[in-house]
Image (cartoon, rainbow, N blue to C red):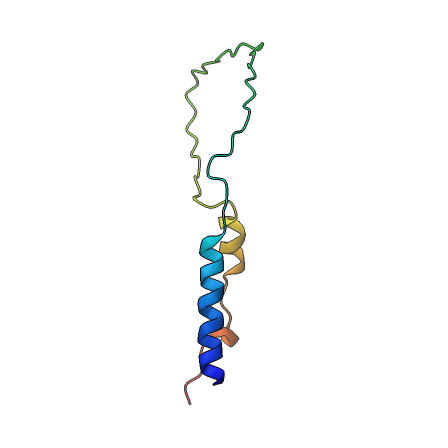
Length: 80
């Protein structure tokens, strides 16, 4: 009896959920704003003969993670 009432209750809830009328078209007013750029960009080209290497990291905390990933003797697994 309990299982029959549970099945009927679930079916009734499903029917009510599908029968709910929601408005399909909601109209929203759009606002158009213009952007005015006032600064001009100037590019400087340096022609120096220095040899510098820039390191590129994929993630922003890679230096911190590398420094924190050190291993000690206690980190090793012990064989029984």
